[in-house]
Image 1 (spheres, rainbow, N blue to C red):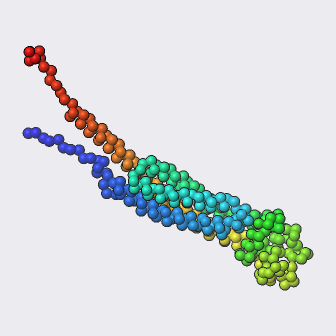
Image 2 (cartoon, rainbow, N blue to C red; image 1 turned 90 degrees about the vertical axis):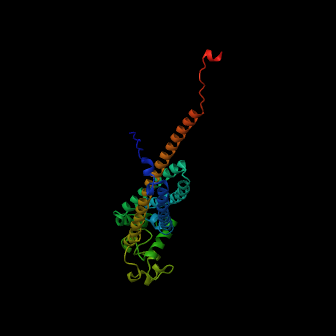
Length: 289
């Protein structure tokens, strides 16, 4: 009794169904990519808003690390947005070279975002002490000597309703302000602000001068924002590493399909060529006669 050989199951076709199929991976990339795009746009807005509204006072306190981290976040967020749009196109068209290039860009921006996020979190350590030291240096050596920082310092004192670094007495370190002179503090320290208010009799009175310093107020101004910026960055990076894993999976799957198709085409060519070969029997000399 003849037995027919059992056909081995095709593991590749079995693993290329449902969520594990190319279409399933592409759909996952598009869904996660859309969420990542929304998160990256939020990070871009937050970084841009930080640069516009807070960098003036960051430079005043010599917070160059904070400034660098924010610019780095904004640049990486913009590049990531472009990479996600390219990813949508290349993944839908299954263009391997484009997918590999997009993968490289996403990995680089991921490393940049993680670095900037860690810098944002790390900058909060001993922040108030460093702000106090930097503000004292500005008061002593740069106020009235650097026009840009003088204007920024006045704006900060009026905005945060503070005076000096830890108290209004810090202005005694500046040679232009002394209790024995016309004014002991700048006009921006006056609660009822007007030009040359610090030189008027009522302006010199402590009740008309902001009593608390600017370093605690500036710490509160930056600390919450730094934590928010770091948390948003970590969230974006988490989504980004997930889409990187999906992208690697898709590239591997497409490579397997390409190799399988090439081997199938080669085998079919061999069979077609063998079928086209004509065999001519060798005739004997007797039959020729």
